[in-house]
Length: 512
Image (cartoon, rainbow, N blue to C red; front, side, top):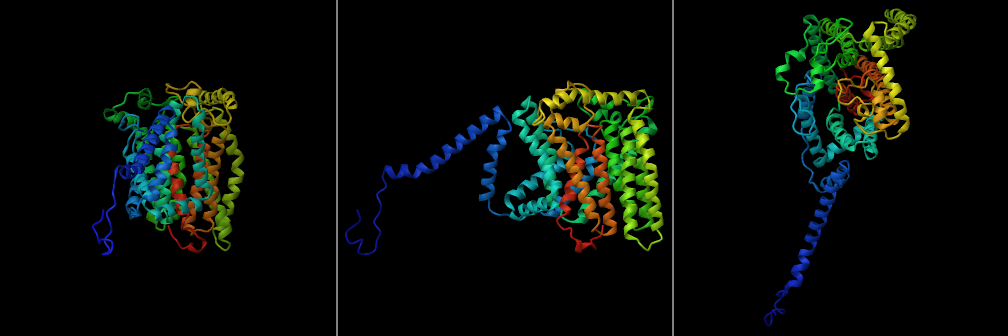
């Protein structure tokens, strides 16, 4: 009770707080705590039963954090781009068999550590920086089908998990791929926003490819693999590693593999990088620069020959030939009054005349005329297709789950692998998998050709190299299923897609 006269003096009487009001005050936080506990418990139980459901339970939490998190200053873009440059140099250069394994997590290498740091910084920006979120969304929209089909490929992998055979294998493999490919792609497309940054990243990756090529040439000259020299630093004794360290010969010819785990992987990497080295040669502004890049291109070609890989030889010739044809056609269209015009026309005519001979030669190489081992290699690929087709037709949609292809065909635990990435995708994700992958590479090649027409001539040559490299990689994937080079290709695609943000026909003066 208030004292007499308190109301007349404007004094507020004290409210009687009994047990009822104390319980009412505690009811709301107790309800929140109970609901959160049940949510976490159900999410944990569902994740134990089926791991992909963990993402479904984490998404609302992530969106809630983004909604209530106070906007903070974004991570300095120069810092992240510097890390991307380091990653572009280390990714092709660091031997994939030198790693640290921490429990069930993916193997940790310096290049992956750099991209894990970049991915963590990107996740921070997506949480606290509306500016970075807007930049990421805008970059994805501007990149069109290139990024859209990349995300569609991972969406197929996620949707295949509920129906996968052996989900205990498929789910961890999917999340491993998301960590080493999807997250760095999202970060690169966000932070690489200018064409000169795209050129810098491509140049760093190409320089790394040249160093890899020089190592391969050294291997071929000494007949010793780098993996054997680094054997004391390798702590794993798995069967695949012993296969890496074994000397590779085909019909008595030594095969170099440099920092890769197999000559086929090295050959694919070099045939993918060769058009970029050629582009830097053609766009160099000084004679010294042209000499350096010509020597770099020669080293890449020599190293591809040192792999003794039919695929590397075929794809290298086709990719460089396609680039030469595109350059000649471009010169024919743009230099109407130049003395180089007749030479460009002659180059196009020579490509047309030589093409039937090239087709016959490629068919002979594929048929295995290079020797007994080459013939057996071709036959083994045909056998794999015949074994896989009935299983693909049994599950044409959804497939058997990410990372299940080798197990489905009985190749798990052996040193052999499937020799066709499209076959692996069809078994893993169903027929939409290889179709989406091919469409993604086609979209990249088409976008590069379209962009080259509006760019400065020096920069346009680099975009032509993107188209040629996309073609070479699409061809290489038909005879190789090793995933080591996918990180490099996805990284370059992300840099290309991110640079589309500032690209405009009015900015043709943006020089490389």
